[in-house]
Length: 420
Ligand SMILES: NC(=O)c1ccc[n+]([C@@H]2O[C@H](COP(=O)([O-])OP(=O)(O)OC[C@H]3O[C@@H](n4cnc5c(N)ncnc54)[C@H](O)[C@@H]3O)[C@@H](O)[C@H]2O)c1
Image (tube, rainbow, N blue to C red; front, side, top):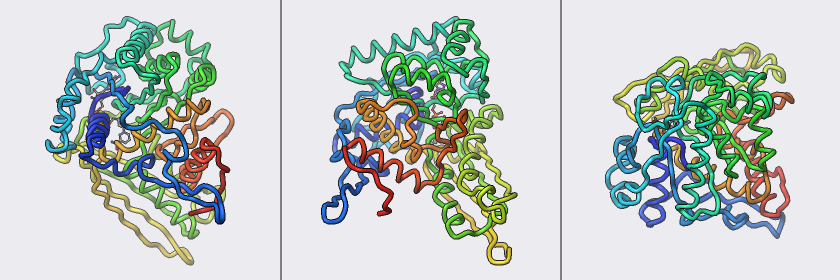
């Protein structure tokens, strides 16, 4: 079940439906393409994920969604202008049937949105109960064995962690009953409802929703996996893959300036400073844990890291990102690297949605609960227990090792660190 039926969700759903009909390829999806080595020496084999672990198949999936706007998945996919008509029309009927349920929404959290497909709830507690009812009804009507809830809705304004409310499940529930609308975001109601209904929850936006001890406690209590946050798609993917080149070669860094233009609804929401701040915090965290001044003070002591996002309607979903990287080498001599990525936001995000949903569902069946660190590979700002001083892993290739090992372990094979 997708929270938000915008560009990312409709590109994901349309792609799965088209793939099922044999009319498209799920390019970019690790669960559909990647192979992992299991065994060693003469016993080694390279297998697809589905051959190692019992992944749900694309044919097993049904889709539901909530959105602030009433457009069905077909209308929304057309409006998003990500996919061409030839890639939507063959599954038109299935898309028309996906009509969004009313959203649990509070305009304070995304003031640029003004749709009317919104639940009429007086309190946050009512929001939770209405969402729980939605999940139960959807599950029953579609005869589903299991549900996964993924947030692919707009980025909410930044909600700083407040120990008094978010520090424990008891304090969170107290705030829920006191209808603390300033510190309980609608996204938290979705996560809380999902976990209570026995559904894993994934946060695809940079919202701090499940990055709080209260949700960790609930995930432990309900024995459900949680994952977040923020799909690692374009510029941050490049950053987490490129920064290791600088770090591995012991080159120095003076500064990294990332800017991009995009013109979809996501860009419109992020044009609001309070919403952008949530994204900025998430994007900034990537570099700092890969190139660390503590380990290499000569190389990474004072670099300047800046991230900008600019709303520019003509580009729609086709984001253009520029990275200017000021590095230095032997005896401190400066050099520059420029990266210009002309990407397609939702085309990059859709396979991540598929992988996150399939792998979180798998994790739940394998008895894994709480924060799923092995999914960091897909996420810009991976969840980590900051109360215990845990440092998130942002290095793309270390994340890949974590992903492969989790699959190996869930498939009954030995984990290992060998690179291949
Ligand atoms: N595409 C990418 O590359 C990428 C990468 C990382 C994160 N994200 C995040 O994914 C999310 C979705 O992106 P998108 O391009 O599909 O945006 P979008 O604006 O096209 O779609 C988001 C939808 O969410 C709906 N929505 C907002 N608040 C809601 C609520 N409380 N309940 C239900 N629906 C709600 C909006 O009405 C909108 O239709 C954004 O938060 C974005 O920041 C996208």
